[in-house]
Structure formats: C-alpha cells, structure tokens
Amino acid sequence: MRIILLGPPGAGKGTQARILMEKEGIAHISTGDLFRENVKNKTVLGQQVESILKSGKLVPDQITIKMISERLDADDCKNGFILDGFPRNEAQAEALEKMLQEKGIKLDAVVQIEADDEKLVERISGRLTCSGCGEGYHDRFKKPQHTDSCDKCGATGKFTRRADDNEKTVRERLNVYHGQTKAILPFYEGRGMLKTVDGMAPMEDVTAQIEAVLKGGKGGDRPSSPRPGG
Ligand code: AMP
Image 1 (cartoon, rainbow, N blue to C red):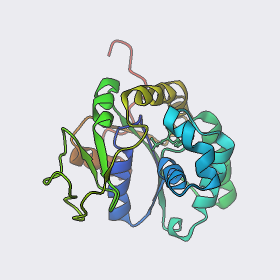
Image 2: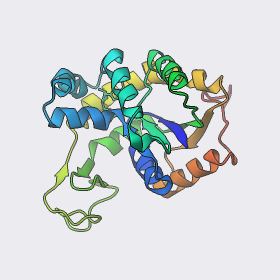
Image 3: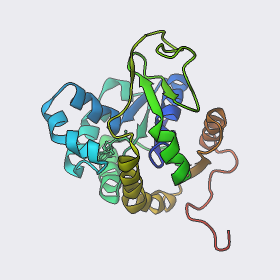
C-alpha cells in the first residue's frame, strides 16, 4: 500500500500513520519528523531548517524533495509507505508524481483528514510526546495515567513538546495549509485518487474511516470543497 495522508496540522496524520504502519508493516515517512531528527542531531540540514520549523513556514522545496527522493529508496519502503506531511504545495505534488514515475512506483490513494481550525489550535497547543516510543498525549484530552511516565513504554521523564506547537506558530502553519497545501487537493481529485475522512471524530473512528476508504468502501469520494448551500 502506497498512500499520502493530507490534512492541516493537528488533524491526526501522524497518529493515523503510525497505526497504519503497525497494521500494514509499511514505512511511515514524515517530513516533519525527518527535519526534527536532523535538528536534534545538529546536522547541516538541521541547522538549515531549524528557524524555518520554528516559524511554521515551509522548508524550501528543493531541500524537501531531495530528502523524500532519498528516503523512498530505502529498503523499508519496498512493501509500501505512508507519506505524512509531503507533498505540501503544488510544486512538491508535481515533483512527487515525476519522482514516482521514474522509480516505477504507483500511488494507491490520497487520504485527506478534514478538521476544524479552532479545534486544531486547542488540540495542538496541549500536545506532548514520549521521546522513548513516540506515543502522543494531550494535557486535556489524553493525559498519561501517571504524570511523568509513558503508559505505552513506561519511560519516565521523557515527555517533550514540539517547539512549533504554540498558538502563534500553529496559526502560521494553518495559514500555510490553507494558502498552499489545500491547493493540491484538486490535483489528486482530478486523478480520481482523493478520499476524505472526518478528522474530528474519535481517533478509533478516524482509523476505521481510513480503512474503509482504502478498501474502496463508503463515504470517501466527497468533493474537497463544500457544495453550494451546505
Ligand atoms: P509537521 O511535523 O508535518 O507538522 O511539519 C513540521 C514543520 O516541518 C512544518 O511546519 C515545516 O516547517 C516543515 N515541513 C514538514 N514537511 C514539509 C514539506 N513537505 N515541505 C516544506 N516544509 C515542511
């Protein structure tokens, strides 16, 4: 299975991608995670992108496209992959299409996770992650059972918050999504690949919706923009 997960920041792309990765045994490729890893390890790339990530703006296409092209050649992508956070504008979508053609890879679907902006600001501002295993938590909606230890892996003192998960940067990330990333929805709609799910539903329901649209089940082919009068 080779799919793209699209959606605004905080819609649950990362959470759903990790669930799919475990169920399907395919690679989870998150451009945001790759950049953050480079920042953490203070690589040349990390130094180039650190301030851009903090601002909520996009890293230049040339850097991002090269990173993805190399990542797709890794062995763990042979059985399939989930792209999370890429492509994010029209130039990246076009570059991806060309790159996949050259590599002889066919995409199965593009899943758009829809969500409400104000709820997303609330969701993202309270996020924390266990740096031991990657499990996600939230100050209000998903507190760990014990304040400082991870329910999943038991690590203590490992919770971290992303530098860009503050209200100001979240609003900039949402602006970038509405101004640039949404413009690629018609690109995939025109190719008959776009499926839409409701990201405001409980996490398990979103997973079920994604599984249904990937199997070609009900509800996935709604237009990406609202119909007149509704
Ligand atoms: P994310 O973890 O997907 O929310 O991404 C975090 C940040 O990484 C974004 O706000 C951008 O600064 C950068 N980033 C991630 N993916 C891309 C991309 N496809 N193109 C450009 N910048 C990106």
